Image (cartoon, rainbow, N blue to C red; front, side, top):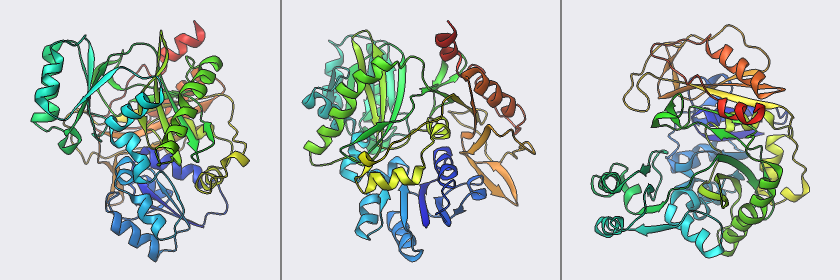
Length: 424
């Protein structure tokens, strides 16, 4: 089989490495891929947002199955275009991808179908949003409606900060058209949990839960990032909470999407807050999370392509999805200055060999004269599995210390909150 994966980061590398375990696959193409992915797939220099070029490549290279892994091409209708060519895909069509590409759509869906989430108000005019702030309770959260690379969510402790957020999003257009509308919502507190789920629109199989670390600095300080590390499973996510989420959030969401005429097929990501009032949805994503994928997929026992094909054919209920026991951890190595300005083109030195339980996922690098150099903010994800979380963390950090490039940094406390919850 010829497989095409659309995207070019650590998430895509994790998907490709898992797909390679299937002996039926003869070739994997990644559009556009990156320097490290090139060791596991044939990278093709086509932007993930160039839908017509992607369709043309798929048609000319006898692609048997496509995985559209990134939010932008999903929102732009990449799966719709490939379906029109008769190419089976893993990923939602554009109407269903709105669950991530429009926060207003997502919030209205939850309100209509009684899915627990934070109270909110939505605005399309900055004046109306600013007027609302005068009588609001603080802290609150201001969110750009559209896709903003994970950066369009601003936590505001007071009215001055909220006004500055509206100004940045709606007036200065810091996130472009993603700021045409904003959602202003109540600030929730409690442990955060990420749960990805395979769904064919009717059946839903949650994956192993995970805990992300968004802030750039130790102790959850500094600016928000795309994610500085993850661990799985999340010890805060108990069996009782999982059952409650299935009954009140997961299944109601896929039923709501079907009722709205946009059934969701693919990977649906639930960002949850375990509040004193029960679990609530912070956000949906219409695809695998990054870097959650780098700890969840290493624990997957069932063949990934088999699951993806069952999702596409709506036969997921016929599968039994199994997981390895133990735990996984991922430590992100980032460029100095990230998530603000950072330099590119720094030579990367990798260890000559790695323990069997460690994998390096390439996120922001490229090949230059045969050498790997940095090309992004989050450069590498160093993941490890172990019988315990402590074992996985020790292995990931040991490998990370053997990787070098100028300005490299990582958080030193990934998984510490999880360890505290496990070990008391």
